[in-house]
Image (cartoon, rainbow, N blue to C red):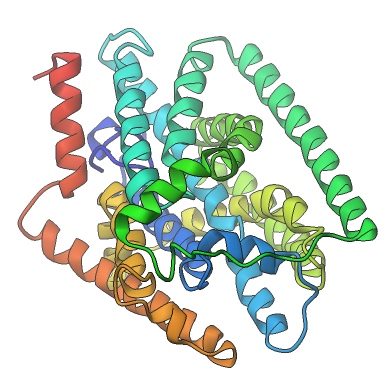
Length: 399
């Protein structure tokens, strides 16, 4: 794996020498690919909304009726699950890098702050010019904090994990109760964007709009900061506990039971019928447990599968170019949907939003998978990964 979004700089060469099987390494890259395409499954509903993220947030507050029922079901299948998976994969990436540094006799976190700084810069560029819902900036800050936590004792790490999870649960409870209270007291009617930069504005108009609404668009990374720390640390612990190795069978079993047998039904029951008041609880609560189920299922599948297969190879290619694919998929969908591009989102009637959104997702995913495949036939790293790696080596003075 090249220096990419899911590991913030780890590589397959960094993987520990214990059980260096092809299937285990395949599971890592496949999971990164699933996480990247899964986040697109969430973001695509924002991109196909004629008022972008503003309109998407407003629709979450509406009670489901008509076609919105089907839309809610489709959204709930992906809402928060792949964000959680991507976050956990970052923690796994940090554990891989730490193990590599320790085996090489290097101090940890060593030069990792340079990696975090570059990821923060990538995120800033992505936020301004591509997507206001960027996650890279938050991951950069979280990764920097967790990198230093991983240098402490196992006991201290557990304390950090418990403290972060407890803070997040408290914030989640307050937000959920506040949302319910707001629903009972009534909310002010939605005021349509006028002018609407998503539908009528230029590329630069959207950049200015993101800057003017910086506080609103950057609230989520601040709110989920404790959750991100907890998921990073959990990912690192699961990796060290053998989630990708045969001895991790019991862990995988329980993660799948909790994720699919308990969390997934609760997530759907609370998320679909609600009028937005349970959105916070499901996206940042139950969805994370479903993410662990996905992680365990894929790890188990590829541990017992000698060949990756056609689908696995395509997902692996997306995983190896994860940072490039993450940025590019949002850019491609923006070109298709926003007014500065083809403006397709404004031309779709209300009854056609669901098939249109599904179609845009499939088209964008197909383009991304194809580009990743063709690029890796000629190059070792994705284009953004190559630039990122070059910059990192220059800053850290590594050859």
